Image (cartoon, rainbow, N blue to C red):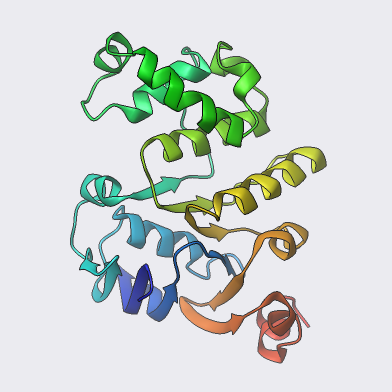
Length: 242
């Protein structure tokens, strides 16, 4: 059974249909990239999966459970994490403290920091190593580069036990070196996490994607491997402008 099942999903905003009959599955450990022109409904699809936006109709099932009407925080507790275009980290805290806050099941930064223990540190170390920030654990997050800040947010989602991670343009603003490192991180994560990625950098997509869904005007236009998508005439017309 697929880890995520999206079936006949619709959402209307004041007469505008942003997502129109979208259906796709995502398997555990897969990296699925959502492509399409601006306004195709890609980010809205992520909003629907994480619960930021409620669907007008259709269903979303995660690990066999219908989550279509669940609130956002309940979906997060089930194991769905969302990374937005603008990183959301606590810049005044250290990298390690950010992970402590992410791991806390109780609201409030102060509670999370005062309960930080040696066991938290042992958990944080391998997570930071996965994203290449092990040497920056004591660094104030506000001093990190743009790419490092993005990686810290990914580490925070891992710390939250997110099994499905939704990424919205994760390489935007990164250097070539940071983008290459992000691709390595993504491939590493796919051994234990499922990723859905909205991205415009086609070289990055070629590196990380197991499968691609191309959207146009809220609906699925094509689905397949990078090779199948690049030779699809409908995609060339709608997305590549040919």
